[in-house]
Length: 375
Figure 1: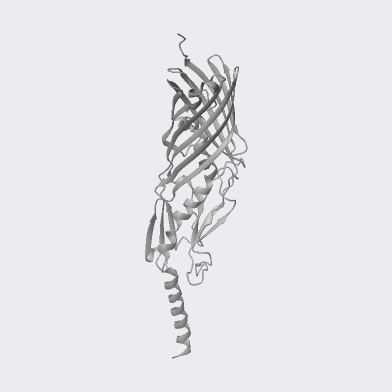
Figure 2: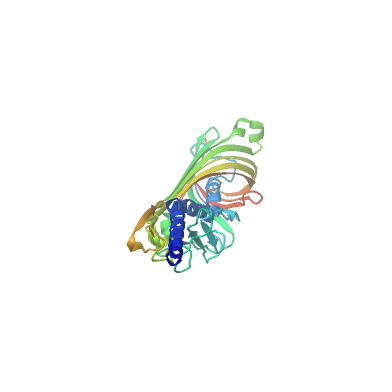
């Protein structure tokens, strides 16, 4: 064969074979994007999700002295779980993280999660044979608040009722709080669901031990449950513009519509209290389990050329990656600490802290609406 014909033909056949091999699992590589972006989101929200559950559960009780039968009280308690649990996720080979590790409370300058198509035979990134840039695109990441310290706030108005026999039930509901707090601030965030609720039952076991109870010792054991549900219509601005430099080979369209966060939290708590006049001093311990989910409505649509050496117009395939985020996790904690409650007639002021485990703090104000009737 004429050398002038052989060498160009050899090069063409070699490039064609490389292109076919490299493109074999493009769809499989694209389908790793939601799992990796979910891993990023889980790490980004680690501080707040890890502590949100026990912040709500430990908001309720600051003394072991339960209400007497048919006594009714109203309290407003604000809690805060502190954290430095910044986590850098382990992404798969298709991804490179540029910028800081993901954290809601970290730097205000977000990085990028860069997706690259890989030649599975060599593990090397595929490049545009004409431009020389990597074939892939960059997913912009969420900006942090910039505090450097993570916190999970909780606020709950609580009604408590004594039902006799040393037993008390409590319930709290707070709809619309986040919607009110973000009104006029988060222009691109429209909350469609915003509800927080909690329920608790506790019993003073020393109610059956008169020797200790008459000396103002109390020991309550109880179970607490809370739930948080947040839904938002976010639109494509949630992650901004996606950078796809090889525009003649790849087109990426952001089709995000909404995001939701739901958590359910179950806890068991014991509180040992000694009353000194108007002051209740307590030791407490609690075990809390939380299950939370973060999901997006919609995702991204990726259109890629079927041939590295042609444009989208000459043949392409579209992949719809939805949901872009799907996080479903469970986590549990054991914490212990101190509490004190100042009783001033119908009013009380309460403080609670777990400085050596879980870093939880709360402040509460209470008012006894109905007092025990003296016979």
